[in-house]
Amino acid sequence: FYTHSRIRQGHTHGGQLLGAAIGPGADAQFVGVDLVDDWGFGGLFVERVRRNDGSSAAITARYAAPYEHDTEITFGGRGLLLHGAFSVGGQAGYSHRWDRDFLQDDHNVFVSIEATWWPSLGDR
Image 1 (cartoon, rainbow, N blue to C red):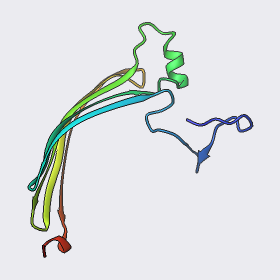
Image 2 (cartoon, helix red, strand yellow; image 1 turned 45 degrees about the horizontal axis):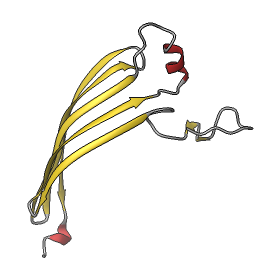
Image 3 (spheres, rainbow, N blue to C red; image 1 turned 60 degrees about the vertical axis):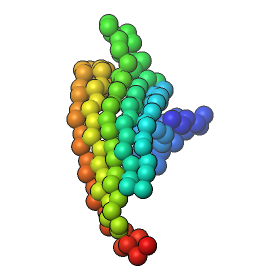
């Protein structure tokens, strides 16, 4: 999050605030464990994000009872299989977000799958 003594609204790029997408005063941690081999990789991960803790919404919410941080925990797995010039990978997980935008709890399930063809790798 950027501020300037003369530019009161802060620095922007095309009207968009510069800085981390998780907002001012936020923090995030990510831990992952992967097994990597010739066939590709597979692994598990967990992530914690506390969003917008320095925003005006967070400051206002502190005066309301009970105040909770806008915090999200995500658990998931990911992997990639290699076969010649082709790869197939993806990830899946679950996230729970407490006090989303300082209003209510939320949860999500996500799945992504991707396939790639690397023609220059097929000649090895």
